[in-house]
Image 1 (cartoon, rainbow, N blue to C red):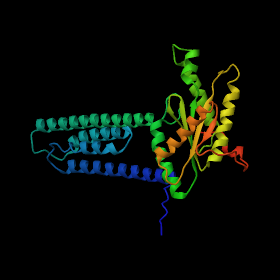
Image 2 (cartoon, rainbow, N blue to C red; image 1 turned 120 degrees about the vertical axis):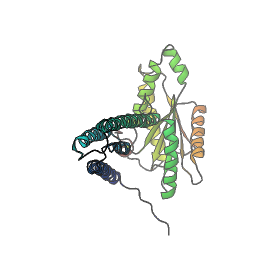
Image 3 (tube, helix red, strand yellow; image 1 turned 135 degrees about the vertical axis):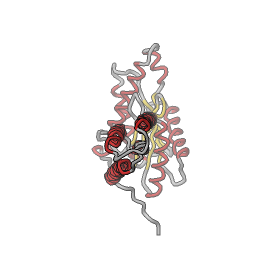
Image 4 (tube, rainbow, N blue to C red; image 1 turned 135 degrees about the horizontal axis):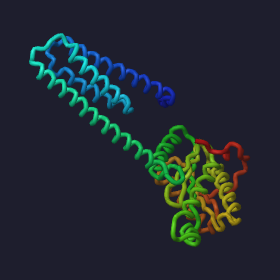
Length: 313
């Protein structure tokens, strides 16, 4: 009997993370108190403050810089307090002072390294997020498209669900841009931003838009067969054509190729079939929607309120 794997809800994962962070705070605080008690009950007075560096290193697990600053402050105060509250010294006071100053220096150096490491990690996370989000259109990038298409194909095959892939390509984009503004990219960017907004407004929240090249977008229509995907894409193509016959963007049209997931498909096969459908739309005169395999108009009614509602988030 096959086992159904159910993903953990987002709120449950968030709750688990909160518990883990709280536990680690308690653990580090407990270790800090133990170090302080060891310092007070050991009449060495030499370098008992040095282990606080381990606590500061432990704060690496806590993402915020404030946690590190907090443990640095606590460690510094307890190191100084240990000097005054220690019951006695077995070495000269100048050695004790020297070792206390060394302990404070180690704490400061450790804090500096931990903060640097955290900043580098934050920069890496930020760069990774940027690599999955297009700066101009705020659609996901080609890198995200490759990863998420693989995921969706696996999911849809497992549960026997529909998945359609549509590729939008601007017709004669290079010539269109050069005719209007050859010296800068303002017109190019304006067209692409406008097109991305129209695409995002015309698909469901569950459908995913991607900018996979300078003038090409892809849409993953989840839980959608090829007939419904064609209806949505054709409605969007006609809207773009009608708007741009005015003085807004004269001559601006798009061609669309669509393919649906088949049992033996992988990412490359599905994308290649959608691209071949796009080529067919171009060859047939552009400003068209083509599918592979070719389908006739679907006879079953479509519910525009479901498939064409505005996208949020």
